[in-house]
Image 1: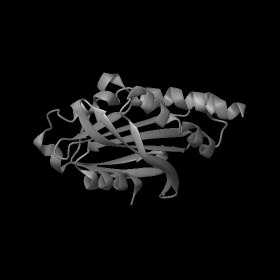
Image 2: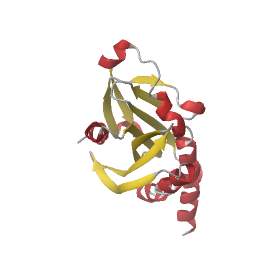
Image 3: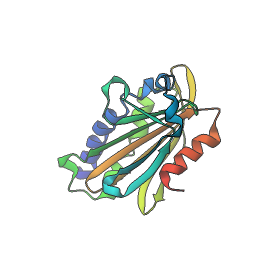
Image 4: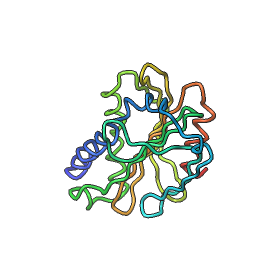
Amino acid sequence: MKLKKSLNIMGAICLTAFIGGTSVCALAAEAKTAPAAATQTETLSLLNGKQTFQLRGYEVQPVPGGGPGKMYVNKLEKRVVIIGEEAIPAIAQGASDADFLDGMKSIKDKQMQASPSYKVISEKTENAKGLPVYHIEATNKMGGNDVQQATLLAVAEKKLTVIQVISSHKDKSGHLKAVNNILGK
């Protein structure tokens, strides 16, 4: 019980750092994108190769507010993908990956506190190429715009990833396609 409480506290600290800059991400989608970005493909490998996928047509930009990770902006699709990967804090490294991932599920509570318009549509743990990924789908309002927001959490190799896919609420099929690409579906 004490370990689970420590995991929840550490998870909350890590997640707060990861999601700290997302409230201005909708504005980042308006950033100028170089014409060449539409044809660029970047292969990402996270968690020592256990989580890999490609992003096509995205431009890398810093996370607003100096947050950790990288932000990928696709202006044509009006989509932002924020990817963070960090080492699990030393205090929680004795826990199993499953226990740590379970402790990270409090992210939705942190997002609700940060944005009153954040509403969870669904949440589930999925298997992405053998890696358990906790997947939250939600709607939110960012920069005055209605958005769809997927949050994907994974833990392996004493590291954690937090991936957020933020799309226009008008592009449900494009949002699902972007999320499924990351999940390897």
